[in-house]
Image (tube, rainbow, N blue to C red; front, side, top):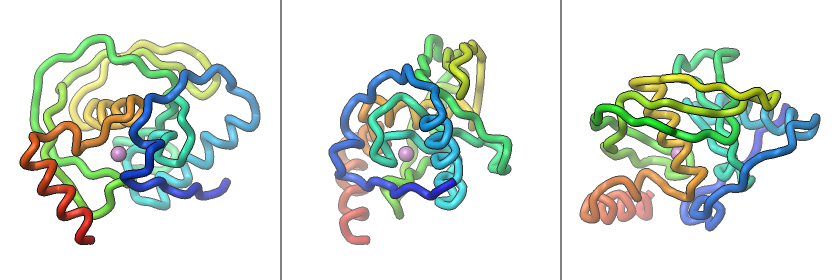
Length: 162
Ligand code: NI
């Protein structure tokens, strides 16, 4: 495994829509493992492929923060959202800042696992928040795009000062 280099805002790869993944071959299996290692080395609970410069619909999530309990989620689609709550979020691509972001409490998620096998699950709370944050990355959306204008300006000013 190898640690991958994180892309930081305002890198353009973070602001474009990623392409669906169709190749689940051995090079891609290695890339999944490299993403997992990178997430743990960086102390994240989630990582999306654009954050390491790859514009494909892949994300890693580990809501328990325990190595070995991570999920590889490919081509995710959120089909139902229920409830709404604010919660604090940070992002490895925006180091040093965090903001209160509204997210659905429960979501229904369709995705493929690392072998390409389809799944359809309901997830909630912290896990659902991670997934919504990472799916946003696949659509070129960052947490600063999910807060109001004044808060966005304040977060970006803080970010530039760091
Ligand atoms: Ni992020």
